[in-house]
Length: 307
Image (cartoon, rainbow, N blue to C red; front, side, top):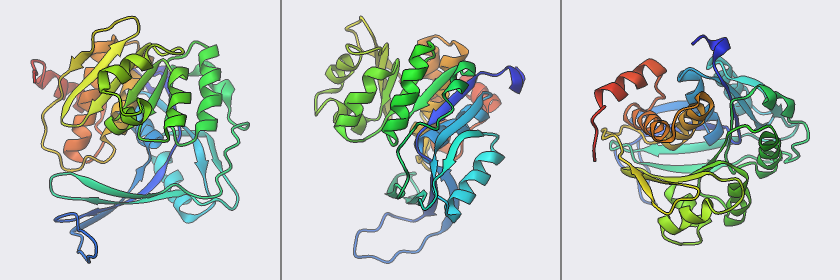
């Protein structure tokens, strides 16, 4: 499939300048520790998802807001290098872009200190919603709810598959956004927020009982992914791929990007979740997002995987 023939996936939400430090162990305060490695990466749920879409063979557009600072220059350059379309990105005069410090230990576990930016006008009226006419899927995270609401409404009017990265957020935001999407995929903490502490099966059943939601899932790190389809009571389970993690940062974001691309390509649900799980596993293993050929080879090597 050539790039021009590939489906377009629009990813709306956060982009972050991730300053990543490799440490021997995560220090406890008060402390002064030495990093054994450093890297400046593009982070943020929607931005990581867009990069995953692009590397896995799709066309990707990032929609979101940046400040007019030096971090914005770095992020724009990085996204452009990855081939991400930026017609839905806006620099806000006087605003400050999101940035994070990420500490990663030798087992790939991490601690993130995030600053979500400042002065980033939430008004979504400038979004190029007509671009959705050409899109195969829309993915949103909860970091810009006003933009997500506008884009999800426009996408549903067009019958476009929509995906929510249900990461930890304010419960009220998840309660508002989940019924607006066809596919809600949570982290464990995000599902806990959404379900107000309910057990995962009950929270997932709640998600597919409201609005337009057709499928709800929760990714659980080193455990299997649980998911359910609308109209069913049975919770389904997809095994994970066992890898040795070097850096788990962004693995969930990559899962979401891969899933949105799978929906744009018309994959069946079980295949889509397996495809997405493999993409997330490779990100955790390598600390980098895989390309399509590498992912397909990994899936073939693990064709008989069972937990």
